[in-house]
Image (tube, rainbow, N blue to C red):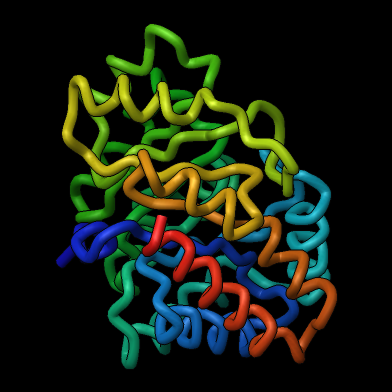
Length: 258
């Protein structure tokens, strides 16, 4: 049964992102469990990929580190099976079209269902091509998350109307990464989505400080933070868990009070 709705039922959702396998799968597993305990409402797990075009340097480097350790999609699914024995927090996989097609779309989505993956975010899948994956997602009970950006313009209405799970609002143009200033486009995007669909909206890309998170939470249903967390993991390596959890707790608190 899809658990994604749980993420948005207890106030504003905090959604941390980490790259699976960085610095190791054991640490990734511990991070997922501890972030869930620290209040993460939905955990976004990135599948390491050699050409992550939507990612900035921090997450690109994390992908390279994970791949250099030999991390595969099968390793990630095995880890998720272990996690699901003790953790019920919703999980979304973030990936690209190529790894799914290379793995086999039916096999990939079947494994998502079997390992309790609730949602799939495919950064380079245009809305117009979502039917490449949607039938498989529907068959296996996995939400295919729609993304909108400041450049989506008139397409936001169309995307929002057909969205499922939640809408991922990309707050800034360009690749992922920490930013000092977040554009005001996100609030307008959320407003447009809500005009046509009451679906939850989560804002991501560039958010790193409690102040930014609180500001986004004033108008969005959830806040997604990735690069700032991955940077902590890069800095502390295998000893990163307590540092990440301290950060997640601070950000969750900011979102809740936002």
